[in-house]
Amino acid sequence: MTTLITGGTGNTGLALAKLLQNAHRPVVIASRSGEAPKPFSAVKFNWFEPNTYESALSDSSIDRIYIVGPPGSIKSSVVTSFIDFAIAKGIKRYVLLSATTFNPQSSSAILASVVHQYLLDKKVDYAIIRPTTFMQNFGSFFVPGIKYHNQFFSATEDGRIPWVSTEDVAQAAFEALTADVSPNKDIFVVGPDLYSYADVARLLSDLLGRPIVYKRLTIEEQTAFYAKVGLHPDLAKTLAGNQKGIQEGSEEAIFNDPKLAEEGRKFIGSHTLKQYLQDNMELWSN
Image 1 (spheres, rainbow, N blue to C red):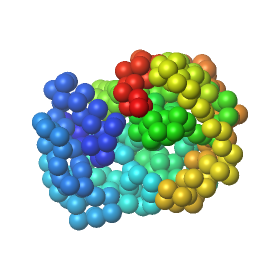
Image 2 (image 1 turned 60 degrees about the horizontal axis):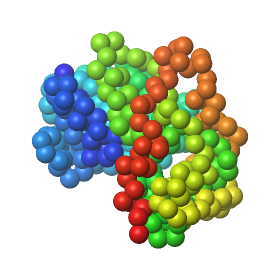
Image 3 (image 1 turned 30 degrees about the horizontal axis):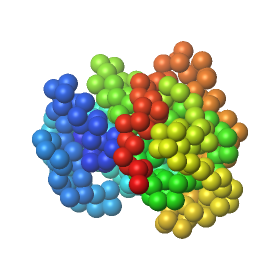
Image 4 (image 1 turned 60 degrees about the vertical axis):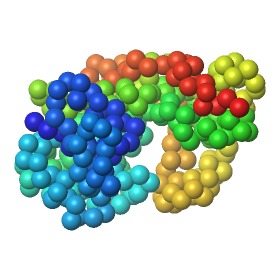
């Protein structure tokens, strides 16, 4: 029983590979270069090059796949085509990385939403991992603004978010992939605490000893920013719209929803945002 990890050199993919390795479960990382950090084995794979599908699944022991779609793309057909190819190869279980805000059976053309519904339609064993916002965004996307300009921005106003660690997302995926019986449900992955962006600014200010400002954007400004960095207009509009939802309490509602826990559809991570910020202060120091 071998797991193929697409997006295997990304944050959740590499963390998942380490969990599988530590559990003595075979794993293969799929990457565009065909390379992966040691000690992992890798195969060359590109969503937009169907000729790489065969080599990616050349190991006959592969029977489950972790799916991370091509970043920033809305072209779901490349993922569904690969799923069809994998089903024909006899692959039994699929775990898709999605997000709390991406729902199946919607009018949205967002890739994860379409692929979620596709897996349901195909009636395969599956799990949909639906994390909230990654706390690691502060260690990647927001680093230049915090380090050099003492600020970061969003259009979420004072909406609170249960920030989640990529390690906890990987743990949720690991459990879905290795469970004796496939979960066959979507699983919301949240952190253990709620913080608004304004709260994070206060935490960083205290840790760094200088004022860090939370700049509040309008939804229109956030949409324009996403478009400026190259996201497809539909994706830019959807992501900015998600921030409107956070303003109105959508992420806090998921965190507080008892029904999700009763149904086994909520995974609460152990990593806290405050500890993450404390552990990574050098990223924003100047």
